[in-house]
Structures are given as C-alpha cells and as structure tokens.
Image (tube, rainbow, N blue to C red; front, side, top):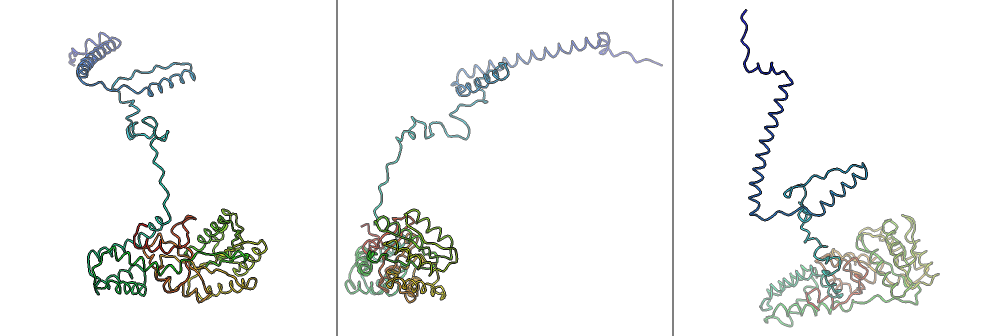
Length: 435
C-alpha cells in the first residue's frame, strides 16, 4: 500500500506542536492590530488637518461634565471604588449642549431666559380696561345687529325711498325678528317722512333707532320693591331651559348687595339640580333657602316659604318654579295653584310675576307670553341669552304687542350680566351705533 507524501505546509506544525502554533497565531494578531492602529493614526491626522481650517465644534456643556462627576462621586461613596471617567472626544455626539437638545426650543426662547423677563414681570401685558355696559350689550347683540345694519348699508348706498326700497327694508326687518306688524309700522313711519327722497344708510339706521326707542321706552321699567309688603313676593316662571333659576339667583345677589333681606324658595321640585343650584346661590349671598325633597308639593313649599319670610321680616321672597311648556295644561294648572295658595296668606301675592324668556326662541316667545299671561296673569318680563342669538329684535315686537314691563335683560353667565333694561342702549346697539 503506497503512502501519501506528507503535506509540506503541515510539516512545520507537526514539528512545532500546538503550543508553538498558538504563539505564532498571537504574533500574527498583534501585527494585524499594529497595522490597524497605524491606519487609524493616519486617518486622525488627516481629519485634524481638515478641522484646523474649519470652526471648532462646541465643547460639551458644563452641566453634562458636572453630572458625570457627580455620578463618579456617588459610585465612590457607595462602593469605595472610584471608577474611571472615560474621556469624551470633542466631537462626541453622546452629550449635546443644553441649548440644542433635539425636540426642545433654544434656551433663548424660554420665557425665563433673557434676564428672566417673565419672572420679573417686564413683559406683562397692560391691564385691559373694563368695558361699559353699553359696549358689552352691543357686543352681545352683534349677531342681531350685523345682519340688519349690513342689509341696510347694502340697500341704501344712495337710493330713493320708493315703494320697492320700502318693501325690501320691511323684509329685512322681518328677517331680524322684529315681527311682521312691527316691521310694517316702522317702514310706514319712514315713508311718511322721506318717501321718494334720496336717503343714505346712516339716515335709515338713525331713523329706525329713534322709532325703536319710542316703542321700547314705555316698557323699560326697573323692578321696584315694595319694602312695606314684608316681603315683596316675586314668582319666577318660564319654560324649560329659559334660565329661570340662574336669573333668580342673580336677582337675589343684586338685592342682597343693595341691602335688602332676601329669602329663596326652591319651588322646582321636579329637578334636583335646580334645588342644589338655588342652594349654591343661597350660600353665595347668605340668603336662607326653603327646600323640600324631590317631588314635594310646590304650592305647599311656596306657602311655607312665605310664612317663614313674614316671620323673619324679609324684604323680598323669590320663588323658583319648575320649567313647563306652555302647551302642558296640567303643569300650567299647578302654577295657578301656587298663586291661589300664596293669596291665602297674602292677598296681594305674588306682587311680581316674572316670565323669563330665552331670546333664542325668536317669534315663539309671543306664544309663551300669551299662554302664561292668560294662566297666571304675568305682569313683567326678563329676556335672557341675548349674547347667543341673532333674534334680539323679538324684544321690540314683544314690547309693541304686549306692552309688558321688561325689567331685565341678560347677556352672559356673570351676576353683572343681568341688568335693568335700557330702551336707548338696546335700540342703538341693535342698529350698530357705538354710543
């Protein structure tokens, strides 16, 4: 059998043995590392030469160095071993400047930067001066007035007040919820003064404001309290969501601030939230509140409240009632019962029967006034939510048709947003005048 000749490449390994072979392998690795190190050194030299002609990169922030030092001290205190802090290269991306962290604005844009202007108050806005009642009323009636005034300006740039113009103006007034009858009477009055004459939009606006003021002025009456009545009883009624309880609370607040002794009766026994709301108003004003369990007899509660108010010698008793739709006969009958029961104790009660109307319902307000008037003979109105509607003109139509005193108008949620009705302010605000 022929033997295969030995491989000349393997002969040295057999002679040297495995230990010699391992030593030779280590020498080869060291030579390779030295060659790699030389290549890296040459690359760094070339990079340094390139950087010498370009601006220096920013050093790591002092905060980052301090953080690392603190970490090292903490390690020493805990383990007794001072770990080495690896040197960070100048261009290391591991630590960035505190003013250039990704996702954050530059330090100069922070409100506490630039000398702490925000902290010292140097950049505070000047206090906004409070608006007058007229300015707030005009702002609240903006939706109602803008449609009307813009229509007038478009219609009467320069034009004769002829039959066609009168018809278009009447349609514009009806669209602003002044009602058919009121619109007809207003344009008829204009026609008698300036028919077939050249008129401007400013003249039309001024004439309408004057005539609307004349309609509103007789009904713009503040609510006068008869202090001899002890108490003056005010029954607050209206449909669901008209703002009865809120209006009653604001009235109580204003009466109390005027020095009157006021008590409240939570007569909306169908809605627990209304009772709680009235209790809150009582706590705010310090006024006693008469309340019963949900579902209690509203007429009996009103009787007890009047009896207690008489005993205390209160000046005003405000009685809240449950909201009811004008077409619900049994609920309207309950109001009639409340009035009958009150008159057993005080024949003149209620001295004021106030219907709260939501201005956003527009011409439907006529139906509500008519039904409540026939049921319990309401004798005054409060119109709320004028700030949320383009139908503010309905108040003019109500004044002309029913001639009921309008004691209050509401333009917001705050106590001071309920004010006595001013015919002049309303008329000029509705036509877009500044004062």
